[in-house]
View 1: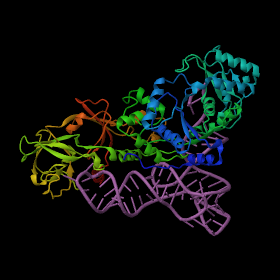
View 2: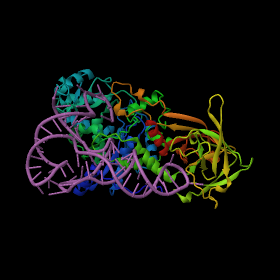
View 3: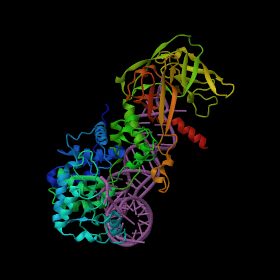
View 4: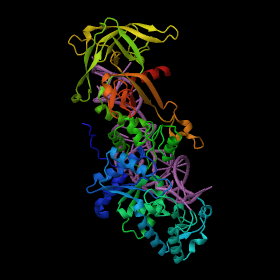
Amino acid sequence: MTTPAPLSPSDFIRDIVAADRKAGKYGGRVVTRFPPEPNGHLHIGHAKSICLNFGIANENPGGICHLRFDDTNPTTEDPEFVQAIQEDLRWLGFDWHGNMFYASDYFEQLYSFAITLIKKGKAYVDSLTADHMREHRGTLTEPGRNSPYRTRAVEDNLDLFQRMRAGEFPDGAHVLRAKIDMASPNINLRDPVLYRIRHATHYRTGTAWCIYPAYDFAHPLSDAIEGITHSICTLEFEDHRPLYDWVVAEADAPHRPQQIEFARLNLTFTVMSKRKLLELVEKKLVAGWDDPRLPTIKGLRRRGVTPEAIRAFCEHIGVAKRDAIVEMQLLEHFIREDLNKRSPRVMAILKPLKIVIDNYPEGKVEELDAVNNPEDPSAGTRKVPFSRTLYIEQDDFREDPPKQFYRLAPGREVRLRYAYIIKCVSATKDPDSGRVTELHCTYDPETKSGSSQDRRKVKATIHWVAASHAADAEVRLYNPLLITDPAKIPADHDWTLYINPQSLERLTGCLVEPRLRAAQPGSRFQFERQGYFCVDPDSSAQALVFNRTVSLKDAWAKIEKAQQAR
RNA sequence: UGGGGGAUCGUCUAGCGGUAGGACGCCGGUCUUUGGAGCCGGCUACCUAGGUUCGAUUCCUAGUCCCCCAGCCA
């Protein structure tokens, strides 16, 4: 029932993989990898990469996808993230089948590869300061200049590199560099740094090392060590590919993986960079990594988004090489599509307006039958209490109804969902503010929902809750995090100024169906006519808290907006 | 003005010499005890200019625009 329609995605990467298998490249094996650095939490952009890498592995017989922590920078990494990343991956529904690795496990092998390079005269120890090295690098249009240390003898390089490892030098005193071409038009090939000295404690290797391999060295060789066949990464690494190939070839690696690049995911009205997400969390502009406004996996999860929806989204956005910004509405579409099928319906009043059914007996309570999910008959029905005093949504009444407004207004009739047709007789107003505080209505006993005499039709059906039985709740509404697309923010502006001040709206005094008192954190519902909501972890039986995952599509809002535009 | 990439509906994305398809969105309609969902229909696209060809989004040439690269980050 909740299994999404089987998809057979196709894209240029899968085409390459298929062609390679057909050609017998790598003996027909397919080994991919997802290589997060444990310095932050996963977000939906990672999910795209995860779905791609695990997806390709799953689609090919014998294919596997490794989880590898790319932990080569001791100053930014934390075991907390190693745990969190695994959790998020499992929650998303992916399994690495025990193939979990750490680049830090390869430090010794990586060191040997470096020795190989030095012995071949393909790497040297440079003693230029970082500033001087930058000066020697040249610019985009001018070639770089060789470092005076570039011609050091192999023996000297070997000796120095061993002493770097032994901890004889302070941070920054020396680096190991590849000896490629300082005049290369590709700046990545101008003798890139392979190892740097960092007297720092690594979360896994402790103080065993004080030199750490750089990405351009560690990544290709880690791939080679693991027998990765297709090393899929994002576009910004495209001009690192010649270096990737150089490292694997010159280090005499036992296996040569191929790097393939694709465009990362961008979404409108939110931020996706690790740096910006970290900034939001650190500056406390959001409540934490799991703030439901964030596109992090933890945020989406807390908001009530399902892994199925995320996967369906990732499979539908496709994989290509052009930069793209996907509209948030597309994500919302897949969230609604999934939630529509699985969410029990329930009635909840966000902004209550009291109504009294004058001709309904005082003290009487009827238990009415309500359908739990029209999309899923097996979800059955439930009883909802009905009584003389009810609450409806403030938005469902207009004293002076505009054109096309079918809901309640003085003299107008409307159906109460699963109950009776009522007619608004009068509205009581606060004499000072002029605000409507209470409605008096009458009901037609002949129109009880489901009864045989019930033949009348009215234009609208609204939801309600019985005053005597409703549970009090807090409801958190989420709106776009940014007031614009991230791409439209000028580079010289402080992007945090573009955060939507209304990104979080907390509503208290909301009234929900009594059965919701027993709802467990994480459980999801559709509040009829409003949207999909889930129980927040902050919630308790005494103080219910719901998060709006996504609203239902609202045809009236659209009409009203169009009317106002006129 | 170096190098590497990329340009197809508003947004993603297919197309691989035979005359543009899908999804979201949008606009209508239908249905409806959720103005939800469903169902039906419609809308809008090949960056430009030349060339090759019976025929070009696909090939060639020349442009234009966008993205990435000058960390001892990844």
